[in-house]
Length: 454
Image: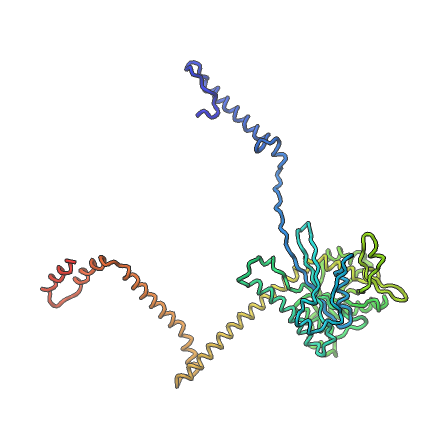
């Protein structure tokens, strides 16, 4: 009762007025509230002003993101050299296998041996990017190019199937975001200079069904500037309308090829749409080289600068006046999120079709098994046709379910009877006996008394 009241005096005559006590109590409460507001929690001065109204942001956890590129093209176009130019950095020259030994047998046995990867960390997003480039054998080494096309399509399908199994794995102990993503994000298709063959269009059309295509014209330093502009325009028109009269290799190809279209913002960041007079469009004209400038490598800071030296001059791979390789590299590194979103949409459609096929296949197998059993029953019982046996087998599950229900009822009754005690049974026996009609009523009374003795 004396929470905020002053100490009462001992003598009754000196008691203060109750109104004064209430006023003093209100003043002390206001003073305590004002003091708590000014000093803040735990008595720190101006703590409310220091904390403000902004909530603290949660600490982000490190995560891994995967980006995989498939490089496909004819033999001798420099696909391995292109991989080295795309992934190498100053002071760290990427060591790859010899491109002359990229055989189809090696790709079938162990495709990971032909896969190169680099990784870097993004402190702002707390993300570790793992960037992989899968090299493939040239399809010119194979006598049957269509079998090579089927092999590349099957490879992309296998990567999707690996991810689907990881999704459905009941023994997976980690989150799906922490599982390495083997799916292919896009395919860089290397085209030879000067000539676009019908088989190249057929290859891009079939492979574009399972992944997006980025066409690249290799060895662009073998063409003049006028030839480059003319050939680029020809490839653009053929990609939009691949069906040409007289080309048997393009039979059935009517739709445009699935070429990856980068957004305008991504193109602007890569510098592709900076100047209105020179708007670079796919396919990209690239120059790749195994040699690099020693002068640029010795500079401070060092710069990785691949180049090809000729008697009449030097073709620099990263010089935007000589090659589009720098633009391609910026696009592939800057558009990871955009390409990843397109990959997820494409995978969802593939996953839906795959699961529907799996469900229809299971239904077909069950029907085939039922038909086989019907034929066996018809053969065992003379005079029964397979259709009659099939109709009887279709009604068999309902009969079995009815038998299971009846047996379940009997089991419940037996369980209840077993739970009834002996005393309850003795108590129920006289009533049952009285209800039983007898032909000798004179003897029913002694029997009732006899049972009542127990």
